[in-house]
Image (cartoon, rainbow, N blue to C red; front, side):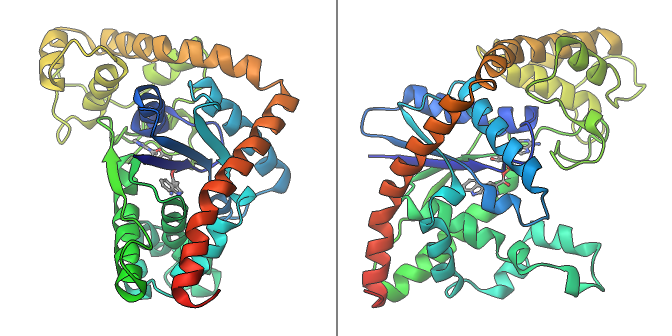
Length: 338
Ligand code: TYM
């Protein structure tokens, strides 16, 4: 039997990178799952507070993110969908794993290094939660005994860390107390920013035109793609290192085309070779709109239904607590805490 777990920070409407890199895989795994597969998808609000959040904004984002997980096609009868902070076992296991995790390893992780590079001389401002962020992520996965974790490329290192923590823990307290999860990286593993194609598309980038939100209208998609940074080389070719902007658009067309008529991006690019930049952008915007249109429609009907969202969050929390309780009991017993 497989257990699938993944999470997303409720820090705004998810973008196209989140969708192609992770969320779409979540739905696919759900739809293809055999009856003995358990699926858990979490809105990781405790991860969201590693940077300061306005309480009302966070509440709103949690609600919007929940509505979006339903809008993309997650079925609450099949998948356990829940807010991380509703299940205290995540935080409990995190503390226990903190006593196992190496600060040296944590300090070498990409996300920590990126976020601290700019604050080098000011460690007073660097919060402990940012350093221990991967420990909480490890607890998320391990507390549910996940066997498979579908994510985008940027999370691979965090999951490597989770396996390391699990194996260290098991070495001390007994094999099989924790399960080492496998990372499932989706084919669209790194969707790039529209304004700076050398960087990944991200929720926190100050320029809102760098990303397509899953709620963006047809017109907004068209205007953002029209303004996307490309280059002035004649013709269309696929070469992510020398033509990152153009290649990102080709990637987007390639990955939004679910039935994939092409064996590779190169093959698709050969078909697009004679297009003008303008036509390539029209093709890209159309491809995105085709995928987002039904999501947008479902989202707008779900977001107004407050009582259903509250009920679903409650049911998800109960089922997720149930899923986590066995591991916590096992860990406590193995360590002499009970
Ligand atoms: P988050 O909220 O940043 O992103 C959610 C998912 O979207 C993927 N993703 C992308 N994929 C491709 N291209 C992009 N530009 C892009 N941007 C984001 C991410 O890889 C991720 O899969 N720490 C995690 C949340 C988390 C988690 C977990 C994930 C907490 N606990 C346990 C898996 C298992 C995060 O901040 O994801």
